[in-house]
Length: 412
Image 1 (tube, rainbow, N blue to C red):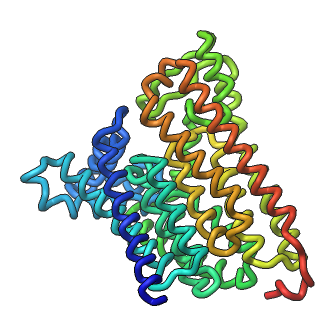
Image 2 (tube, one colour; image 1 turned 120 degrees about the horizontal axis):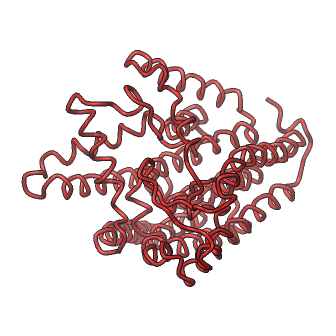
Image 3 (cartoon, rainbow, N blue to C red; image 1 turned 180 degrees about the vertical axis):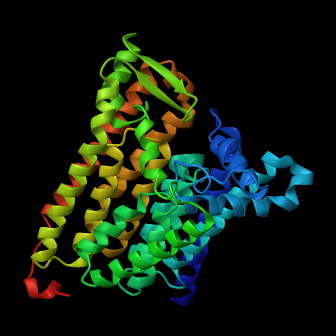
């Protein structure tokens, strides 16, 4: 029995390493520069900060929360010994891949442990499959740094709620989306007061340090910087306009200001303008459903996973950006759902794996054709976006079906 358990763990770790090696390598092979942001954006930002130039988020407004700069700087430091032999770009790419793989390994170790249960093994297999299907975009974006932190955070919520909340808050100061997991935890978990205090304390420390560094007007600039964005072609709401582009009635244009491809068509700007308010309404509505369930005594293992998945999916389906790496956000709540309630997590897990595969087919594999509004990639992206809506419905339906128990079981 001991040997069998050890063998299972060894197999899981071998698969983890093989998947990461394959995904890292695919970044060098696949078309459309899936590693482009790392060398074209992250590396220059980190170089500027280390050389005495502008510090994004501190001396100038930035699209990301300020802690996103830390992994970029760390990758720059790791790359330093490799520059002479590989050049700046090559060294930085390798350093980024090593950094993300190391962070994933830490989270994978927390998930698997020494003798994982069957649900944890299923979650580990799911994570590896999702990474492989999504491809290099799963590793070569800043989102990849937040995923392992969020995984550890949700896994530790019941045993180490303060540490878990701190990890999720740090993740939200790198990329906003882990904040949805914090909201779900505050709603679904009995120790919500400890979570709120941990979030407030970590946020206060981060904000205080940033203010000391000179980030005053730029402190929350990442919240307003998104306002200038148009409707990105991968966004769910952009789907009808993509079909118009395929018919020659709309255009796909590149924004040099925010480095994305956007829709240019009558009505596109109006649609993009209403998406953020609609997103807030949807998030509040989903949160309200979860809160009613929590007040009626719903258990954490039944309520938190679908609530977290629904909130995260809401951030994607009504987002005017719609970047392909957003699919990595879905991996985290499904991992916890598999750990806590494997039977009910099967359908969401299959949907997320399908979303990962379809996203990779669009970006990077057929992205050039998508930019020409060719029929096949537009069709694949349409199917991907429809499945995102299906996933949202499945998540909300699961929340509604969570049974209530006596209200006293969920008091502070």
